[in-house]
Image 1 (cartoon, rainbow, N blue to C red):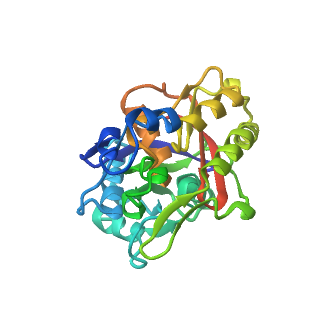
Image 2: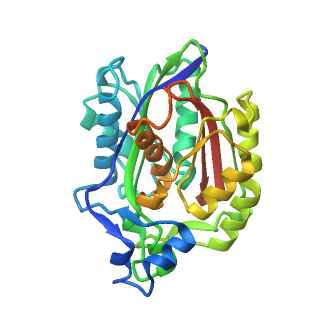
Length: 313
């Protein structure tokens, strides 16, 4: 096999929905203030039973259920992107593999914060291309609520919990394009989760300036690596950080024929879960036709970024 393809997608979100009006009861803010600055109306917040590995498992189960090519027994690689897992060992991927009933899969956790899923997808793609695996489940899962200071209105208005997953398999025709990835070490503290207990903080204006000026160029590089132009794209799924970043980046990219994912409006910023979560919901709602070239691009903590173009299954 010379490549890989995504077979299916799945996602999971907690049932508890927290609106901007609910947030306004905690800090000095309002629905109008939040929507005008970040475009978020609501977010899902997990209860104590909805752990990172539990949400990851539910998303993976849904992804497996959304196709009939593979069973759980066929999966020989599990890669989970998360920056909010509490325990160091066993890692989240091992717990997901156990809950899925897998036999002897390789199990890897990836922590690259908001671009984690794109890094995980690239690693799974490379592993299958190298012949070290055949079928993978790739997941992004986060409980950002655990790392949030709910008295800090600059960050608590942003976050949400959830998970998204894809099933990836070997293919004789590459349908996951080459990854473009990198980081800016000098901006590594611009988005961070630090301390004990860990707390999410960021230099919002610095991230906004970088994203709106530099991300369109990185997105064009991803298209070039895939042998496409922005006009060829049928869908664009950026990390769901802030609607005021997503909209100008998509416009400056020039993806004039693409549907732009805006799940951030109802899900908030779910870090590594945001790209697969938005992608799965677009699939569920039938927004993207099969065969559509779709740009996936994550960016954030590190300051790291990664992106690839996939062919929508």
